[in-house]
Image (cartoon, rainbow, N blue to C red; front, side, top):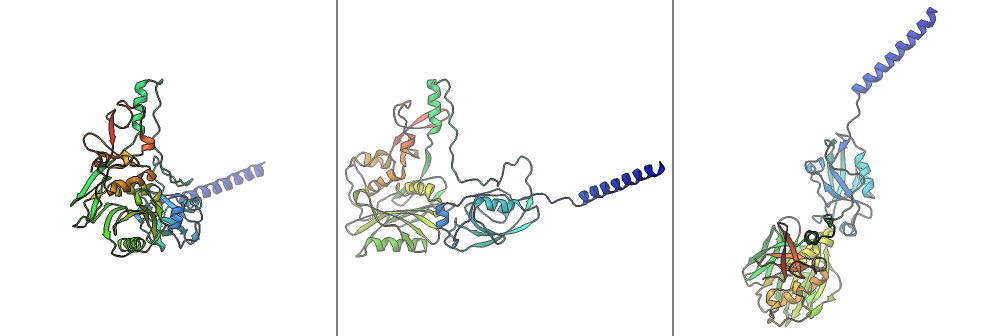
Length: 400
């Protein structure tokens, strides 16, 4: 009997010793906390692939970088392309996400990055050290990878089809982009906030404006060809302006004798040149943006370029307004019957699906006419925007 109780006691003692050992091991060998990088990935776009020629295939876009995160401290920025992580080739955004999520706090990885936002052709090696996971409440995730998408606000529900509710509903769905006037000499333009004049020729033959941050340029240029053909002039002008040879699409004929050519260069810039030759003189409007942002940025910067008006030497005489010039694409002078070369060039805004509107105070905005025109506005059909709960009427045309 004693032997039986002794066996049980020994077994219990051994079990307690083993349990105490497991507890001690767990206390002194706690697993590292999950690593936090602050990175969020998105699938590659065709534009991003085109701007990373040395990346044969695969890759993942950096869709977002959290403020104050290890990724931001490593100077990784949104828009870069991840080609490899610790030497492992990245073939998709999900794979990049999984590779990053597998690391713990304190781990160090090396990312092979193409900075397409700056037009870098060759990759750079960037080291990143993981922090502990962000505190609870931080709404940030790298899994599943987020796709790049621009979504508008959720429309307001109509209250029992009430007339007042419909009026309030329509107001927020029209979203004009406010434009500010910029000028130098006898040249002026309308652009979004935080743009600046980058250059101006004393004879008003050149006018250049750009965004203060990021790569966005709108240029007007006029010059005598002096025997040079327009194709050679445009290619030389693009190379001199951006410091890299440009690849241009074949010429596309536009109304009123204009020619359109899209372009891209090895520095990652892309955009379009719209030009016309009259009497041996060429006048061109140029919009340049990062190649990865062409889909949404080119229309905006193009609208800035086509709002430029300069009293340039040799400009053709003003002409009456033909019916093809829609009011939202032209100046008030043209609406009254005195149309300049910029008004004729701005027929391209129909392709860009943008137009100019203004209020009675002379404040300019950019709208999408196909989306923002309101048939049942409070003051009749037209364009509106909401101020303090009221819908203010906007009128077509730019005021310069």
